[in-house]
Length: 263
Image 1 (cartoon, one colour):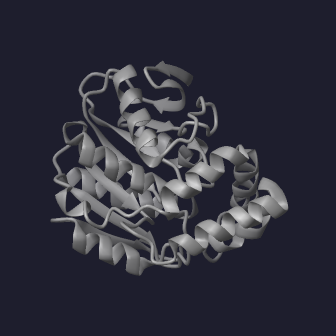
Image 2 (tube, one colour):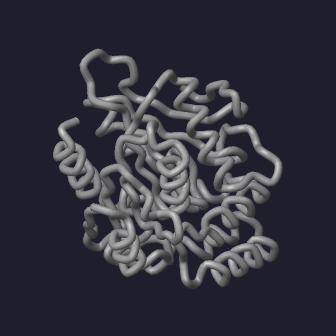
Image 3 (cartoon, one colour):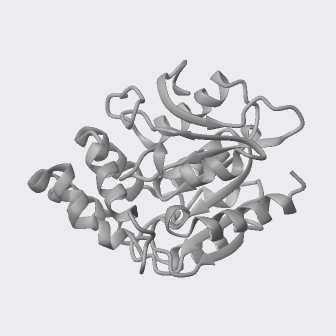
């Protein structure tokens, strides 16, 4: 689709399988701070074969219009506006890292729009969030986006990532507008939803790459404990991007979760 006009401005979006009769609810996929909607290609291809699948850029990322001084709430409201523009009343929402923060805000502020949550490699609050935030922005100021991407890529990926993924991660991060990255870094690393997540009232799956050193599995354990009824799974040998590193395992776990909901 490319770009769609919404009441929150233009949003960059990729879709598969929308508009077919008889499918289950669509899936909305939300990327991390150093990425864009293209990271969800394996999920668009898989889930778009059986239901609608959507991946979107946050304001300022990819093909989306920037929003001055955008916050994590602005990102969440932009995604609600996207669902409105696509005439989607409810959706399953899957978010990775920053995307998990945005997905939780959608579920908390618009519970009637979110049928379920898949929260991958994310957290309610990161104990080292301020340090990560300050360090990443200092590195950005010193090296630029390409330098930052090259310095961080090996920390993002687990052992033996698929061929070409490392270069793809670098290229994707390099494309991000530095101002958008600064706002995204603030939105994720300084987030604290610890006082709110207990109010999430939809089926929730918490996933994490077993080798993730950016948002370690212990943070997913804490998130599972904080969200009533949440389920938990790890993806072996994956780092911070399990949907791309181990897409077959990631998709199977998510499919099983959705099948258990009867949709």
